[in-house]
Image (cartoon, rainbow, N blue to C red; front, side):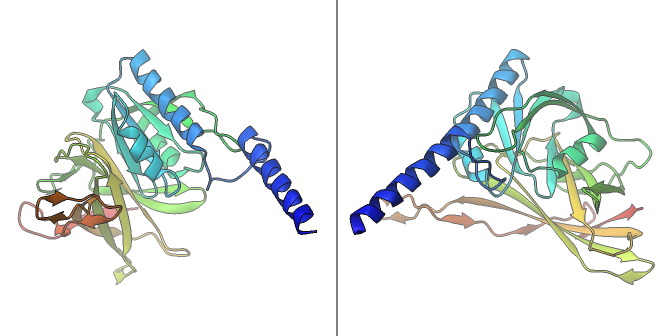
Length: 290
């Protein structure tokens, strides 16, 4: 009896694996095969080479970021992998177009692209058992001269627009702020760079709950643009202004040294978060919103 049950269990497991690997079983956004990820990255690299584009941006999420970061380290074209849950990294408008790879569940990136860049959908790399990826050629738009700003968190970020833009992302309101990177950081093994933003809104003169956004990327390029989105609380009124503070830190692999031995571990270590300051020593920047 036990042998019969074991046989049926093995047969059921084999059938399940066959269905998954052949694409017969559809699944959601939480699972993507390595082959699908490799194919999407390869398509992005081929597109960059065909059009003589020198940089690729990859919008990742919690389910793909580790794999994308690893695969990006093997690519011949320069790559920036960023966490797309709150942010969008765009090339310097003067640098010309670039390649952008977007995941199947990513709606925020598309919302922000429509506002801050032009985009052309080139290909939809297949994703086994699920919705495909999207592969774009993008070109950043120049910042509007209407709401220009001279405020900056030196030496990291220049505020391009002193007005936070109210947008709708899948029927959920958010406020988007636009920055230009002043600081460069090269990609390095298992290393990420993080800007942690806190936006304290005021609505009709009364304080509201602060909102946080983490912008995490595998590299930083001076001149690139950073779009930071803050999700508004449900049933809240749009604040008339935002006061934004930010910190910066790096996450690197933990590599302890014991005498002459240099060890590598699976653990990471974070540098101390550095509060960013303006040129006049302030810890925050005030923006209007609507």
